[in-house]
Image (cartoon, rainbow, N blue to C red; front, top):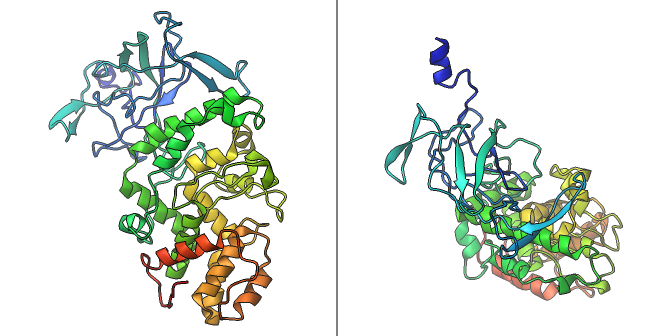
Length: 441
């Protein structure tokens, strides 16, 4: 019986490997997590997908380990990279040969006694065991499973992210109860929301040290943080399907109460479109003329700001706290706007919709509901919402304006008012209106 139990992994602690398990390389500086782009319809009780021995594709299952310290590399010829680690490390900024994964075709292990059907290949394959190894021919390192993920899906200590990715199974991916926004609406010719973030990727790719002279002290570390975000966008985010993106759009719309009224969804999409140039502007360009530091400029689809004239604290840190970031997490982020733009563009927009860019009032959906109950012109309600998103308002003042019911062009319009009217006109051609009558500007 002892031999039988050991043979089947009951005593020798061999476990099945699931997505999110920690892996390391003998010559890699950092550890990473194994991922999967398409599961095999087999998961643990915690909801984590079980992997097979063929799940070893670089950029899909195995991600680079930062810096390669292999003695077999030609240090002079190898491409270099710089990574920044938390301050707890004695050497937080490290430069060296970039990890360039060149994996063999299969994880090697003892014979498994459980098999999973691989629909892509049309065959059964051995389940991946925690004792498995795989070699990298670039630096001749050996990659091993160092910790099997036991966390339940949707839990854990990792900072929140708008999307579940293959590199981190602890991110949000829960469906909303209904479709408030569809892929067809996002892609509609009149609206054409840039949900795939390619414009933002291109923007990050083109930055050089010269762009940050006089703005940040440690430019190398700053550029490395951007590179980390590019790696995420090119590896983790690039594996997310359009359907998953829309699923998460709807999740956040419901989570923040925006889906309570169709009128609110329409105006929310109009505002996010204007604030982000239809999804293309993820982080505001910084200028000293803005009156606040580069690390407080707007970010995300609604340009959530770190500081405004009416809010000396800003809403970026409260927002990050609200979605699970600790003070240590925030301290280790060099540029909060870029971080929010990369990982939290949609949830930050929903937070801005709820809190505005002024001092912590719950606003926009309540303003819309207030205006609807008053029978106010939808264009007047939209004007009030635009003021709220811009900041520098009082809730009582907005309500007083809505009490007038009839829209007139304001003497002092919100920032970007001409563009806001255009995005409103585009949105009313694409999104449902509920019970209200919408008329173009």
